[in-house]
Image 1 (cartoon, rainbow, N blue to C red):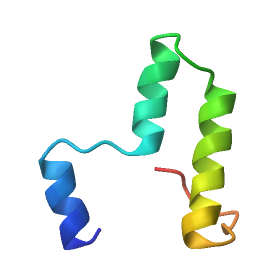
Image 2: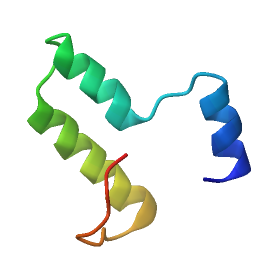
Image 3: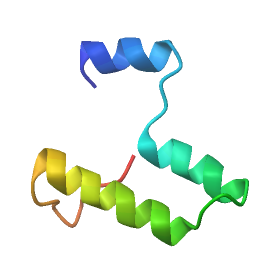
Image 4: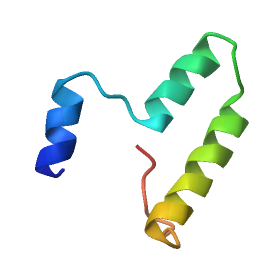
Length: 56
């Protein structure tokens, strides 16, 4: 984890996946939707995702 990410996390930043899980638990969305959106974002920012890549 890079320095900027560590600093952001220390100051309360959550990942899209974490925020999505909270929204699933509160009934605002579905797990399928969270997985779809977070996977699309990773492809946009990082290119093709290796099948061993773990969503965080």
